[in-house]
Amino acid sequence: VYLLGIDTSCDDTGVGVVALTASGPEVRANVVWSQTVHAEYGGVMPELASREHVERIDQLLPQALAEASIELADLGAVAATSGPGLMGALLVGLMYGKGLAQALTVPFYAVHHLEGHVYAAATEENLAPPYLALVVSGGHTHLFDVPTQGEYHLVGATRDDAVGEAFDKVARLAGLGYPGGPAISAAAERGDPLAIPFKPPLQGQAGFEFSFSGLKTAALLAHQRGASAEDLAASFQRAAVRALVGTSVRAAEAYGRETLVVSGGVAANRELRAAFAQTGLRVAFPAGGLNTDNGAMIALAGAAALQARQTSSDLGVSAAAYVPLAPLPGGSAAAAR
Ligand code: ATP
Ligand code: FE
Image (tube, rainbow, N blue to C red):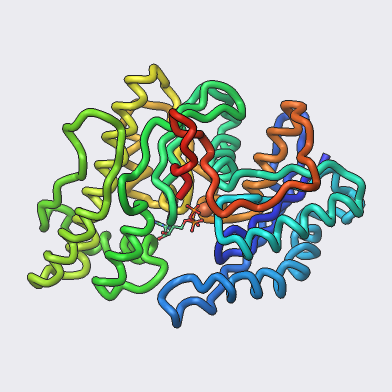
């Protein structure tokens, strides 16, 4: 069975194809159009993002099918992100996916964007729950306990900025460009991680929360005092990585989990991967191209739902800009972004 996956949650148009084989799901195509129109504004312009998705998605579909060497009629299911994300942007991919599924008379799966990120890493090593899942991206720094397939309990999240957002902001103040994650990572290789003694946030405290706005402010102060961009990048990256790894390891102990899935754009970070490799935990990361937003990860999440014989989504399903993967205790829906 071939599944198509579509993600248009933010400023990347992603279309991917996954094949469900006897040995498990395999990514057969992953085409992503990363929008560049936002660069001159210094942030994502929602209306422009929606228009770009509309313009690109028709071209990406045949590209993805060609990359997978299949025809449209070979598709056995379609999955698309229904949230969270930018409302107008989400609607483009969701409506496209629903329309396609209906035209092909195949099942449709609405996928939570974060579940897509988690599956991007879990599938890499054919991992099945139980595990802890750390999603580190531009909008999220969320740690979930995943006892069984499709069940998510929020262990901890950021109190303020997402870690990817902090990478982007520190890169910007240091004049390193956008997107900030790869820029910080590259500059850090030429810097001294011990040059500026940033404290990894919230370490030595109880609980499993994260916080990056204080670290960001500390980086701004160091910059104003004349720290080099390279030293700033290396020292900031070290502190951020230590906070992520330290809290995740404590949570793994507390929840009795030996496996950790790390995903989202920041999971591409080499220092982060190296630090997690030293923890003694079994840690899975997404393969190349599956860290940042893409359609293949949405197809992987759809494949998991299909394999688990979950019923397909109602075609009346709508997009939701804010929707938590795991409801907060007490039923509040405020955990999403
Ligand atoms: P969300 O998934 O929360 O809605 P998003 O989809 O915008 O957010 P992703 O595409 O998953 O986020 O990730 C983008 C983020 O990852 C950016 O903040 C970017 O700076 C960061 N990032 C990418 N590569 C690296 C890297 N090598 N090191 C650190 N951060 C990185
Ligand atoms: Fe994302």
